[in-house]
Length: 210
Image 1 (cartoon, rainbow, N blue to C red):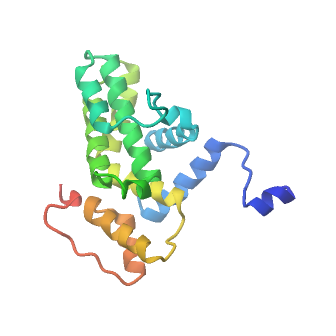
Image 2 (image 1 turned 90 degrees about the horizontal axis):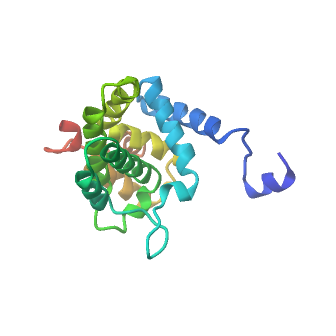
Image 3 (image 1 turned 45 degrees about the vertical axis):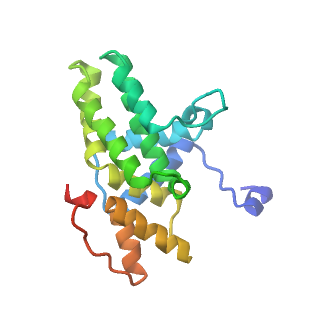
């Protein structure tokens, strides 16, 4: 590590994918989340891809940005069955997962919260897993998308852990954790709340009950 790296707080890594793999493995262990190796590899590859902003953002007349999930869902519904529809569903699931996991703070300022992203992303992956053709690629990826759908909120917890290793301890962080737990039943949020003396109580109709 060079002096400038140390002063800036930048830690060079030999491979971005290797960095995300180690971070995801540690976060899964911390949150007691277990997924198939192929699913974990997919998540790591997604983080590596979206580390480049141009891969995440869509180009629009108003400039680069992410297309609203409702419009992505409309694109998938309007696309012809097959590769185009499956690609649209995959894009919806991927963007929802990344934003919910890495940009949850920005959702506080939006009309829809993290629970919306969990429902939309999980639903997209579920439909995609059922729509993939029965060819070798489809048989390989269908279980991955099915698991991502079933454990979407858990994987969001993992990405939150990757993004931020611990709780900063500010009042707004505590409130954000509690809101995330109410919206998604996040096990990570519940664990961190208990660590600071707050015992979340299960509410009827929560995400975890379904």
